[in-house]
Length: 140
Image 1 (cartoon, rainbow, N blue to C red):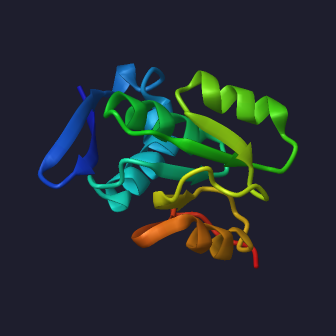
Image 2 (cartoon, rainbow, N blue to C red; image 1 turned 180 degrees about the vertical axis):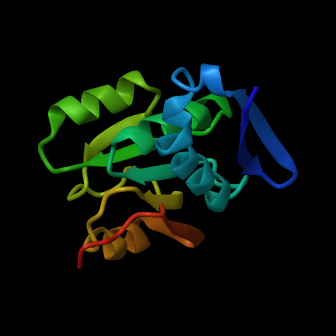
């Protein structure tokens, strides 16, 4: 039987049987992007902010919540549906990307292809915080 190997951290791998691939399929794209962004944010990023709340962000939010982090979600301004969804997945705050963050972020993770979010994210992180562009093409 053929196997697929997915790397998800230094020295770690998850082996998946090929016939089982439909079940873990979300982990193979959005999950890997979200996981990589979470790792790049660092273990000390107890308050990460997610800019864009699509597939990678909603997986990131669930894992980060499980790790005890306080996730803040930034969506398109006025997107109440995405903000409500973010809160159901564990975000302690959700608002528009045009809103100020209620607390300085330890890390800002940009998962939306919008280059204008970079300066907003830089302003939102605490001194010494990180801004992670999550493996996507940014439109400037």
